[in-house]
Image: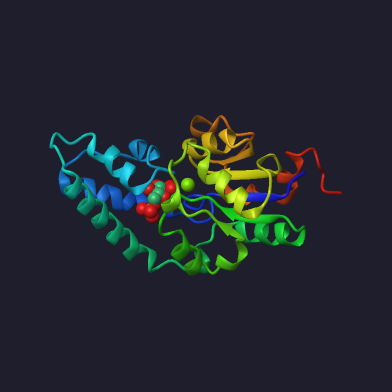
Length: 220
Ligand code: G6P
Ligand code: MG
């Protein structure tokens, strides 16, 4: 039985995936490193530090840890500047309605985002109070595709993983949800998210009925 829905943030609740992309592209341009939307797919769901390592794969220079730290901070500063413009209007279509329907049915909501900026983003979107649990990525050993972040959110909610649904826009995220023993809902393309139990092309299609149907429950 469905007891909790655990959301990814970037690309599911709001389109910060695009803002991340722009900030990485700007950094890569500045460093003269090739970067593309295709490469950006690999950064979705991946921590800031690991994302930078992927961006720097195409650089011939041997970046030191201190230099890498400075570059990650630089990217984050330009990203956070973009976040200042974020408002409740930036919650993706269908998400507020879904949060409402879940609350009405007493289904808990959790957050499993690798972003250290997640609390700030939820606040700017005006939906922080809708989440009963937020997994803190700084306290985790392993990032997605490891199951840890989803398992942590479920534990904070006090719900067994088999009674949870995870919603993701990244391949690493779908892998993490499946590894956690949860039902996975993907929002995106079949090329990236083929492993999802339910694949939707946009958040507008996310309804509580479709989520309940994954548990063989029509909701009636
Ligand atoms: C999310 C995004 C990633 C991002 C990561 C860290 O998982 O999908 O693209 O790199 O969060 O975000 P942060 O805000 O901490 O740099
Ligand atoms: Mg995401």
